[in-house]
Image 1 (tube, rainbow, N blue to C red):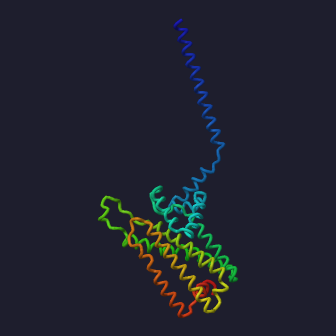
Image 2: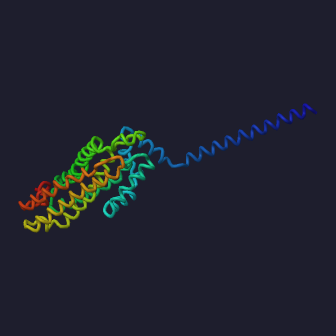
Image 3: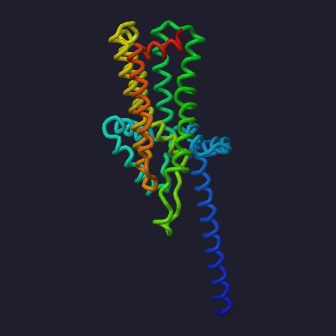
Length: 284
């Protein structure tokens, strides 16, 4: 009887092993079939993302457009026009959530570049520019006026802030020293440039028949438009750097407004029309 019970026990164990083996095989086959049925878009996306691994994350997101938050960028553009201080208050939330002051999303830059390309195309059509001249002006508006000049301005403000505007270390000996990120300086430029774009590209385009007339009123209106737009750019620049709690004496970014006021006065005395001067550079 003991032998029979042992044989029965070994037989039951064999049956259990067979059942477990078959269930494991079935589970693996089901997993394989499910994996075969899944879309391969994510895997190919990772491969595409790795192909641009030499680029910083900020630039790689331009390639992966689905990772850009366009809705937030449009909301930020609206706030820059309605309530700029509310827009810059978001930098504090960004620092608390992602431990960085700058945006890690290039959607704002992409939208501004598209807006400038469209507006430059409208100018080229209105002034009857040739195809070659149109392509040159569109590239110049985006690459030079917006990006290259922005890189230069951002670098200068970034250098000034980190070398002359950092708060003293004596009063906060146990705190970690913070410095202005270059990408944050570029974000400030983009935020400041958007209202300038609306005034010097959109409003100027709508008022171009009046601004380009060689009259005293046209010169006065053009001086007022350019003076206000450039002054507002530096005011927005001031708001961007004053939002950082570790900077002091950020009023320095308002000093160029005085220079702009002096140049506007000289332009008024000599009846200089900045709209005619600017558009003549692009269209002769």
